[in-house]
Image (cartoon, rainbow, N blue to C red; front, side):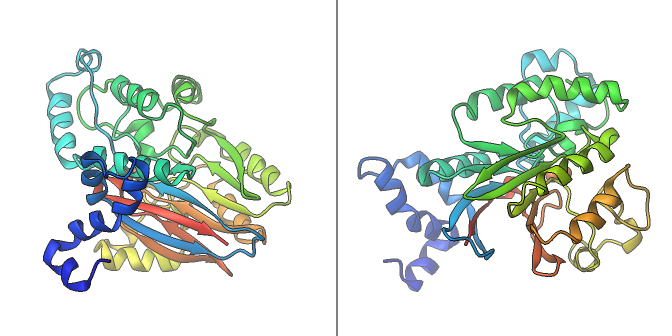
Length: 324
Ligand SMILES: [Fe+2]
Ligand SMILES: [Fe+2]
């Protein structure tokens, strides 16, 4: 057993690695693998229990905002000097994305739990990032809500994959991406343990179809099961804005539709404000799981319903949600 003195002596990361030894050993014929131990040593696991009155509890693993920055030789052929500089800087900023994602995937696998990623899996669209999904997620039980960086995460210069803003270009982008992912982007659902997990894209691929998305989400609620909503960008709540002003040192008026969905003092895409208003009135909604803010925020969304914005996976954050 790990004592407090041991934990202090080893430092926080060492203590986490030791805490995971039994899990690792069980999965490796009695001997922990050095790789797995190193990966778990970087992981900042948070366990959250959501009480919704289920007859049998179950768990899922969630991560958000890995910001993987792979670029292949094929991608490089499309870049120019500015984008090369951009790529180099982003790969330094988000270097923790690779071990962060490895830990999340390994943890879900070793515990035999479904894995949910709530977007910004990539820092930018590239062939190499899509190839990573094909390779690293093959055979895994996972579900995905796309983020803004899957859609247009690119800075100055030429992107490796450019997805335009018109409805036709967004449709083309979704078609290019969807073979790599486990579910369609605009709206998708899957039932786990009697709960309907409804994924709703507010990251950019589906901005032109907000009213259609709202109609689809309503159909999901009409199935009559408890719903956990998954999306990338958190919904506006006054409590969240107050926390962001404090922790991110942001001026209130700077918190706009690029941060949150349904901010009342700025423009929102069609259907987004209506979606927020409608969701708040739904007794079947039990939780909102999202990311995007790269810090952890848990706020009240509606009476008895919390919105959980995950800290970033590139910083090591991995969540295990248990629904009871
Ligand atoms: Fe992000
Ligand atoms: Fe994001």
